[in-house]
Image (cartoon, rainbow, N blue to C red; front, side, top):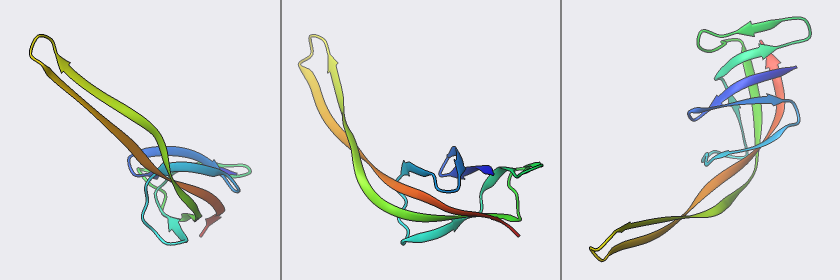
Length: 102
């Protein structure tokens, strides 16, 4: 059994027990997701328009961590214009604990 869920503006294919990294979500230790696009059970596949109403995905938050540093460098030739900036995105690690139908 697997589903395709939407977190933020990105879509992820998940099964029970999977762990995935998404962009930062400021929630507590566990929560439920209602934005389920596709559900595949044992003998059936359901598609939402755009979301399925009777499916919930329970998620546990494992940790938050920073990703790799990205360097942004801008320059214009012959103008003495140089800017160097760095950025580290914060990611939240999630574990899919349960997928249930209502």
